[in-house]
Image (cartoon, rainbow, N blue to C red; front, side, top):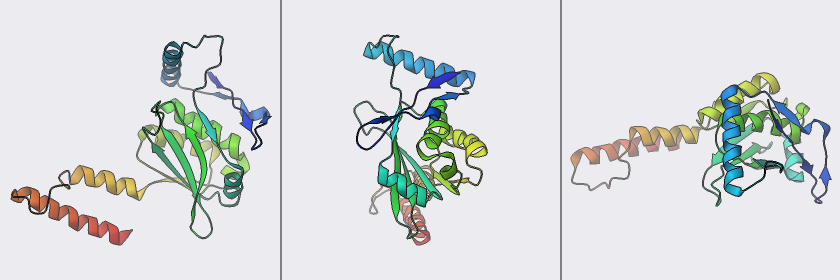
Length: 215
């Protein structure tokens, strides 16, 4: 069992301790080993003594974003981006949709990596701590990319914390990855002398047109 200590800071900079913000995570043996290995590597690289606390990940929500989520918690889109900072930490952004269909940012979090134990912390600790059990129980659909570690941990969390929710794939990721797999030569110029590559380009453009009509 591995312990994360969570703290919540208000918008004035003061710290507000929440009794249920410290969560014991029931990590599987491999997940616990992965976390311990990562923490040991960071301590060694940063020369952090074992007596000191080590920050592995952090997440934040702005007051207005929290208010919007409490009003419109029904649709949650989760998207991870790599290589956005000098430490190469994945940045996960959680967004929602209001009654007019406008997208708003709900939560941001810098993760140490994309391993299973990290996403377990995100879904089973961050969401209930920052938004509350009542609010997250009203989520209807999660829209995600195809990361297997992310989706498997979300599926586990849905059974426990999000009773009304289902998970679906983001259409952009489906199309983008599908195009990369099925049309690897999509960048070939139309006037290529290679007839096979030119035909591949024509196939891609036809498929792209169909996708744009669908969206």
